[in-house]
Image (cartoon, rainbow over all chains, first blue to last red; front, side):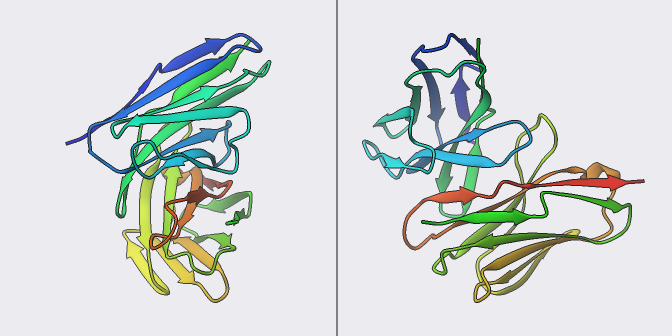
Length: 110
Length: 112
């Protein structure tokens, strides 16, 4: 079976800092997603990618960059962390009807 | 641009009473609908997927899709306190863009 690995699991940053979150999948799936989830809320789409080197903006892309240099990896960069920001970032990959999530990266900004 | 909205924001039902959750979407070409559950601090668990108008049952969960009215409902039969969680609706257009949009969720509390 495959797995989605997100690193790091916890990320503490400083206001204004550039922070990078990584996601690797060994399913060989074409489509990958990055979502942000604030406590007790739904998932908001930041970026998605339908294949290597493809990037598509979601509704929450401002303040973020993404990179899909390999089919197996999809990274997300917070371009300037906001003070007191706290959220979980979830990576997912999809093949046809099946969607698989990583365990998330929990971000806290001091 | 696809909009997905869920109602109510929170819902409390008594153990054993049917719970009904609503999800509305804006893109009529959407053809792929899922309901997820997320217990506090945990990951997402898929409950039921539905791709055509009508009903789809998975255990105590039934999804009801009506694309003409832009609604997909989730009914939970005889909910237990362990069903207390955040319920999320996800909508996409499988035949077109891979964009997968989630609603803001309904927080369900089942009281014993």
